[in-house]
Length: 410
Image 1 (cartoon, rainbow, N blue to C red):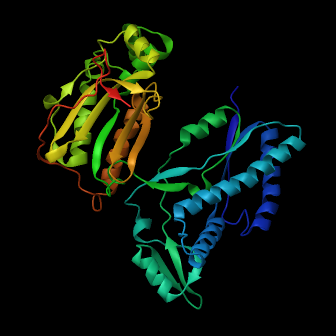
Image 2: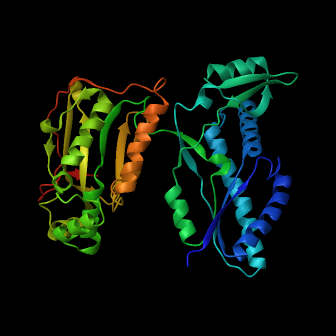
């Protein structure tokens, strides 16, 4: 019988406003958490961190002000630091209380980020005060950096930050895995560190150089079964169909057509010029067998069906879909089953990867509805996405591994 689960939320002042108050509050909290665990509950513990973030932000900024060569800490870093040290105290307090009761159970803290919408009204009207009081000159310097400040009568000026509404938890799969393993999980400190809706919106300050990824969950599931379990292609395809990952006519998936359409859309968004699926090379996985994946594994590679788009010199572009030999050291290599992953390379940020389920009725419906609701909610403020004339598409400069016909992703 599955255990009952409960999320315990510690409010704004539940942990006090300084370290001694926090230590005392942790003792009380640990007893409450232990009571639930003794009654058979699995516990996830979330907490506020506003006083702690303010304290860290003030300390880091004061230190940088008085010591040349040191810089102020960004608010996201202050939030992460607060999650860490609050989690440390809670972990130790809960573990000690459980041991005193003869219960031996792991307690873990997850530094948590949450997805937020770039159109959230709080970005336009921040009201959350944080940090020390400043002079008018210091406040002007903050505003020059793009930060918001407010005048507090009789005390000076103070930073104000937004508090956007969380849409989803980035580390939700990790949290669920730990709960499934019957651990106590401390997470979502302060509601999580906000992360703007990803991909090209949050990479706007970069020149995109390459987009590459696993763009079809069905083919990734089939390849995972072939590589990890030695299941032949035809049998793995039938499994995918029985689970609802593949259509009865699977050509769009296994021949790479679906991934081809997606890499064209990603290329369009990255560089603003239309790439048509009929103008790129597309190769699927129906020609692969167990011998192919075994040879790849022996050489330190995983076989993955990837879509790739690259910005070439002179304003030209290249795009294609094909099975690849992916080095086991590459972040995409361990992405298995129905999960998709997209790596975007920017000139400033380097490689950034986005990851999530890519097949099945609910993940697909969730993605579609998310886009529809986002479009409806932000008709007035959304950024227009589109592309102009057709791109100048050139053959992709493949890197082939000796003795194979598969391109390599290192």
